[in-house]
Length: 241
Image (cartoon, rainbow, N blue to C red; front, top):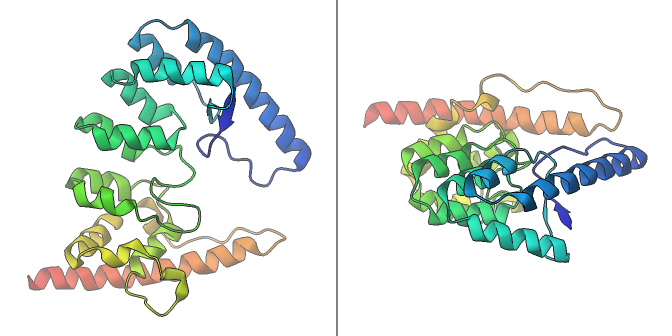
């Protein structure tokens, strides 16, 4: 009846046995939660029940009961109180993005951008930013830009693509959408990122046996240093205006 998403608990570093056990436990929790969801009759009840789902599961279109759940959710999703609950607690990124782009309600839009439960920021895959971020940047208010780029899940691995937006040599950045933003937008983002919690202190290296943490630390440190240099430059340029 359900699909697991990247919003919810992290299953990284679990053994296969631990992973199977965790998924089964979350599936049982979701099925019990679903029983309450199907009994709800009002938009308020739907919103309250949505706030209780912490499993990372959503209704699956591939399952009859899942379709039933989606139909009920669609019936109520035009109600603002339900929209707010969806963008804050529901794990369907496609639905949350749809609500965000259609809504003109400041509270709903900011709640969507401030959500810290997603594994990756919206419009970012695990490895790189997506072209769809340009749609957001084109219409975002100052408050929305601030909420998005100061969210703690917007980490140094995401900031990497911003500070390397003019790198046309490294193929890593060949499809970098930040290449297409204006100089003014770039400077605004850099100034906002000064208040991102990930740029406040130097990255710390965590020990593990694989060496992966060491590689991530090295990359994070490189991005951190480059960001600090860009921040100094942007502030000096701002003083010249």
